[in-house]
Amino acid sequence: MAAKKQVRHVARVLLAASLENGTVSPERISGVLAWFEKAQPAGGLAILREYHRLVLAEINKTHARIEHAGALGSGALESIASSLSRRYSRAITATATENPALIAGIRVSIGDDVFESSIAEQLESLSIAN
Image (cartoon, rainbow, N blue to C red; front, side, top):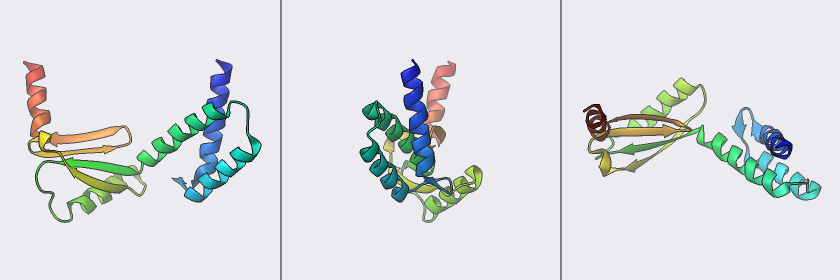
């Protein structure tokens, strides 16, 4: 158990070294990986796996995945991204993909947060209530 705590601790320290102004920096990640290759710490593979997981989670905090049914109006993607940037107090980028299973509406995922307003979600909540 102490080894797992040590792995998590080292990975968090490496993540902190990879951030520049609260954002993941590719240059800093390169520096961390160069140090890692040179130092070859004990439990290296486990540390790298945890570090990778933490970096991906940090990147996901700044990227919104927008699923929509039908056409997405012009400027809607930028509007959603700017609204999320204000809400989360950090720069958010967004990508959109069409998902006909939503029937009508939108689903926005950013990090672990999911915001949905779709017919499919409303139908599902009605079927659960009955």
